[in-house]
Length: 312
Ligand SMILES: C[S@@+](CC[C@H](N)C(=O)[O-])C[C@H]1O[C@@H](n2cnc3c(N)ncnc32)[C@H](O)[C@@H]1O
Image 1 (cartoon, protein in one colour):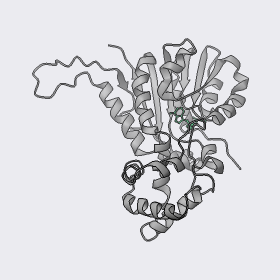
Image 2 (tube, rainbow, N blue to C red):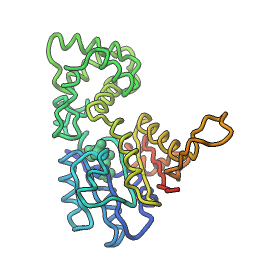
Image 3 (cartoon, rainbow, N blue to C red):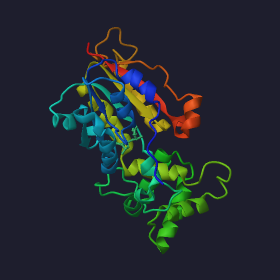
Image 4 (cartoon, rainbow, N blue to C red):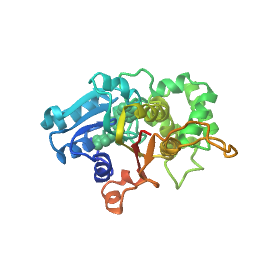
């Protein structure tokens, strides 16, 4: 049974993202269209949305769900990191808001064939964009030991990365690893004595592979940078991150782009010419309240940050 994705921090996203009755909002992570549906329901005909997703099946679900809103919503299959190019196809160069609700959606996790979940047996796939070639299996088979160790260590924040790669190689010497359960069993065996009472032994390695397969951190960095070119004056940039690697990228980007000087402290006068591009509206990340976490446990790790585009 697959579930509809439940949008996280829906009311807060609306409150910060939509500040005018008219304009164009880009939902860069349309998913099942939950956030966009809420935005369209609570605004009038002069507020429009372009929804982007790299997952063709997510777009199909969203298209059906949002059909009642007619031409108030348009769709684009693509990567949010290419936001400027995607918007050109709609003859748009400036927008009033951008939402990046990062990570994966519930259907991506729940459908075994997508290969994201160690709880469900499926092919070792993990592609958000099913038109892309590289899968998790492909990475396990083509990366060197060192490359794989680095991915598991950096993207999974997994301290037993060497042990894991040794176990993977040992298993691959006998048979190719083609399914999520095969890999999960190998990880459980390798970390049996380490993780008995804590998180599932496969959690960190699966997160690492997913981030690597989809180049998630790289795309996020590029998208943030490119967003500056398309956000009009006063436009809002809203991000929701679900793990510290993503949240740190957003936090550091916001901090840097808010600065009006990056000269070394010893300089008597400013010579850098840096101008602030953003005003940060959330000094601390916003989080889900207890009610939301009870209703939707996935929201417990969500961190929402908001900035406003400024031109000085
Ligand atoms: C957490 S879900 C969004 C859920 C959505 N807000 C809703 O209410 O249904 C994240 C979505 O972003 C998409 N996604 C992730 N990285 C992307 C990228 N670089 N470019 C475009 N879409 C991306 C995923 O395919 C997924 O559908």
